[in-house]
Length: 152
Image (cartoon, rainbow, N blue to C red):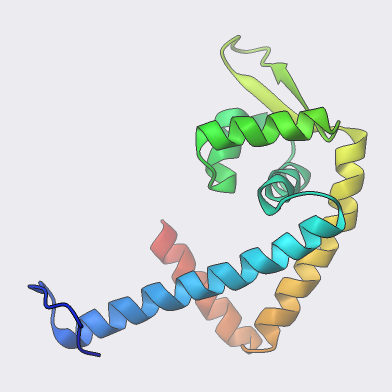
C-alpha cells in the first residue's frame, strides 16, 4: 500500500507493508480482546483495568505494586489509582512488605477472590472461543511461541 504522505523509508516497501500489517493486526486483536474483557468486567461491576488487576492477583497471588504494574501493563501511577479503587471496593488490600518498608504488597480479599472465581472462567472461555473460532490448536501454539519470542 502506498503512503498518502511521502516519507523517507529505511526499509523496503515490502518490509514496510509487512511491518505495518503486523502492527495493525496486533492492535486490532488487542482491541477485540480488551473489549471482550471490558464486557466481562462490566458484568461484575468493574472496568477492564480493574479486572485485569484482580485476574493477575487471582492467577499469580500477592505481589508488589511494581511487579503488578509490570504484569498488568499499566503504568505505576495508574496501577496505584486502580489499586486504590479496588481497595475502596474491598476487593484488594495493601500491606507494607516485611522485607522492605518501601515495598507495598497487594493481595486479593475474600471478596476479590470471589470476583476472580466468577470472572476468570468467563474471560478464558470467551478468549478461547474467539481464538479457536479462527485458529487451529497448532496455529494457536505457533502464535503463542511467536508472540513470546517478540515479547522477550
